[in-house]
Length: 160
Ligand code: 4NP
Image (cartoon, rainbow, N blue to C red; front, top):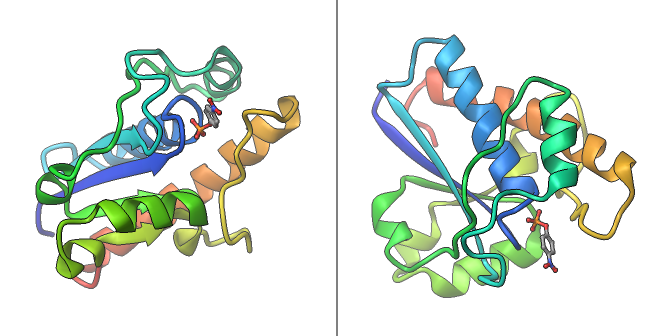
């Protein structure tokens, strides 16, 4: 398996993408692949830069065994040079990331998180920011499914 660097991207980088980052990190560690796969996360909106993840997301994630400690940052053009895969949560993230990509080849690194789901049929990971507690559980269900699928794809070979 080739070394892979993955950047998870949402809007604020305080709910969905930091959760994806930690879920993926734990799966990678469990498989002994921490020296092969690097993960990070960023947001297309910089308004929460420097913040810890949203307390509601942290609480819901902690209940499933994930400690979210990353600090929010905005995605940059340079991320397209640093990362092999840019995994976005919804269409809005996709469009914003696409516009930021320095080249068409770099834009080709963008994938939708839900494309890796194996159990759920969703086409995007819904923004939980203005939702109740249930919204955060749905996000975690989708992210656990998709992170498992993404890791399987990476282990299979060079296709993505
Ligand atoms: P995220 O959720 O994109 O999953 O981190 C949001 C965080 C902040 C805002 C919207 C969504 N906001 O409008 O500030």
